[in-house]
Structures are given as structure tokens and as C-alpha cells.
Image 1 (tube, rainbow, N blue to C red):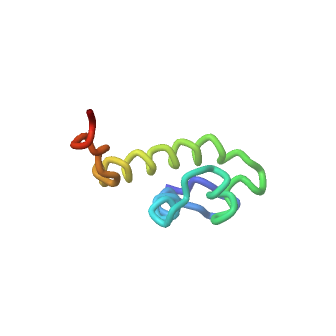
Image 2 (tube, rainbow, N blue to C red; image 1 turned 90 degrees about the vertical axis):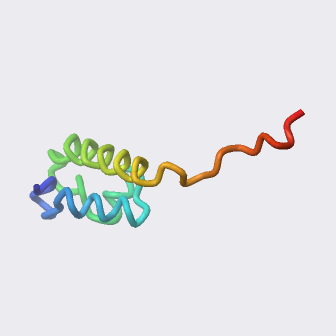
Amino acid sequence: MIICVCKAVSDRAIRTAVKAGANSLRDLTRDLGVGTCCGKCLPEAKSALAASLKSCDSARPNLFSPPATEFAV
């Protein structure tokens, strides 16, 4: 689905940007140009960003190991 008509940015492009490290609307604006023309896409871009971040987090649940408890006193 097209999120930003002015810059022809799709939800797929947003997901790809998130996988490449984008984690804020500022990153999407810098990388894809989202919101730089009329700005009407910003609410939907925020929503797509949040959904992409959530799906990336659930795909990698053990990104960081749990804190070590073996040395706890």
C-alpha cells in the first residue's frame, strides 16, 4: 500500500527501512522522504513504522541475552 503519495513510498519500503535500521519517523524522513511535501502521510507513516518495529521485535525475541544471574549474591 502506498503510504506517501508525494514520494511514492510504500509500506514495504518502510518495512525495508526498519530492517535496515530505521527506528524513528526522522529516520524515515531522512531515508525515504516521507512527510517532506504535504505531510498528510505522517499519521499513516507513524502507524506503519510502529507496526514494522513491532514485527521486527517479535521476529527477534532473543536479540539481547537475559541478564546474568549466576553471579548474583
